[in-house]
Amino acid sequence: MTALNPTSIFCTDWSVHVTIKTTESTKVRDGRSTREAILEAASRLIHVHGYNHTSLDDVLRESGVGKGNFYYHFKSKEDLGYAILDQIIGSFLERTLEPCFSDPEGHALGQIRCFLDRLLEAQRASNCVGGCPLGNLAAELSDVHEGFRGRLASVFAAWRERLTLVLRSAQSRGTVDVSCQPEAVADFLVASLEGAILLTKLTKDIAVMEQCVAETKRYLSLFEPRV
Image (cartoon, rainbow, N blue to C red; front, side, top):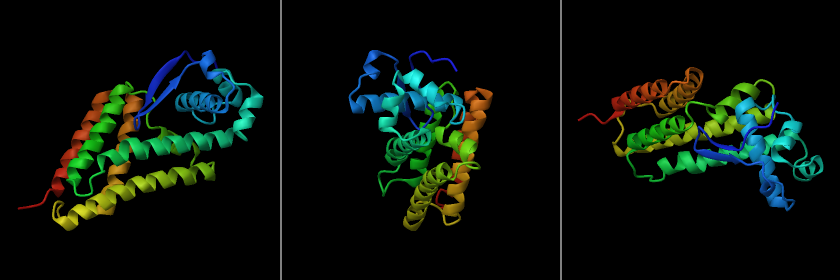
């Protein structure tokens, strides 16, 4: 695998901005900078090539870090993978999910529409390349690595639970119709959005994501309170 050119990408995601620069600034030997250089390089490679197709040698070459320095910060490739996954999860929860639902008294359906728009804009920013880092890792590793599966399951559970609580709370205030089944709707939304991102990645056509978001918004309108 050849080294990548210096570049920056949006992990469609969830608005995780990963910048890779193979300059001397990433090769400094103070602990924090070296660790960050490793994480950034590995994040970029794994997002493009997958976890199983990214070797330790690829990471060392891309980051400009020696093997001894790598093992000072990470026990293994698996340990590095967990650290990257924790970063992706934290960024998704803190930068993408929570900002849309920060007001507990806010309009639930409007907040969900805001979230849909954020995902759509992330796909536009990425030019339909890369897909969802969490979805990619879930598809690649869930059947073969229990440690990664457990961590990934927890973030998808948190996403579904957040949507469920938002809908249930709004229903109790009368701003979401009683016909809405919060848990079922939350599961449907997560599954639909992950599928939409995957199909957009496959087709390289932003119209796919636009149509899926529009149809999801139309579906949500069914749960506006009936007068």
